[in-house]
Image (tube, rainbow, N blue to C red; front, top):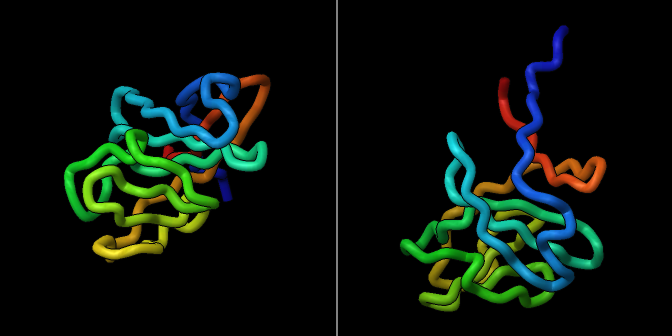
Length: 108
């Protein structure tokens, strides 16, 4: 069976620093939030599932991102809500870091 996953470059790996979040916009994708935590890079949708807020404007608290609007939070590794009022799962992406670039997997 042929692999139908494609890699989409979203940013350079050095564009996000440890403990921080950046917002990335690419054609054909929703706005993305890119996080660096303990040397690993994670990518989720940038828009909070509770309200129209950019999670890149929020803060990391351990492995949770805290939304700047209502202080709800999500686990950046699983997308699961970790604080009210958030109840809907946040979309996460499979990340591959290769040759100084961050890629996410998508269906091709």
